[in-house]
Length: 240
Image (tube, rainbow, N blue to C red; front, side, top):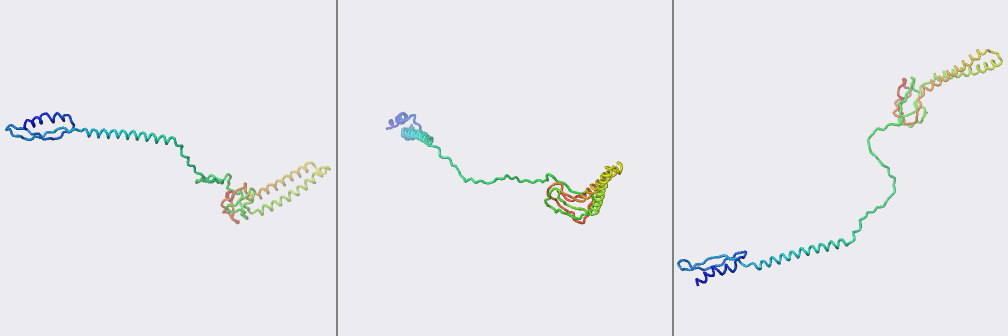
């Protein structure tokens, strides 16, 4: 009995399960030096054939799953490529015709194409103001009048003198034709006629200087002059 156990411990299990991956324990009975049997524990490798089969089956199934997934993905791509593209989404709206005016908002300064500070070059008393602030005026329109009664009276006097000179010159011309007067008297009458008409023209200019007229059409600025005011030469009356 002891001999069989010793042989089993020395050769049987070690040769049968040598080279396995995982060890497994088993009991061995042997005789000691005193001849008494004693129990020893040895570790032997357990066969793993079943586990290997399971691992191989799992690996094969995984490979099959990968191949099937690749095939399914390829089929889906082919189906997607064969389908026509989806129709484009188009938004529509009703078109209306209307006038469009571009706008630009900015802060700036306006300046007239033409502008002037209107004034008179003579002094005098204001008798009439024909413009108000912001009025639209026309070229040649009378804006302000200074007192000109004395100038008009002098103009009438000069016009009468010029009329007399016309008559005198006409008489002298007739007398010269019949040689009643000399050529010198005729020349004197002609010179006097020219002088009288020149005086009338000069007085007409003086009368016109008492009036302020618009040099061009435009909009009047702020007017601060009122009738009764006395103006010096060069005083700004209105800005046009």
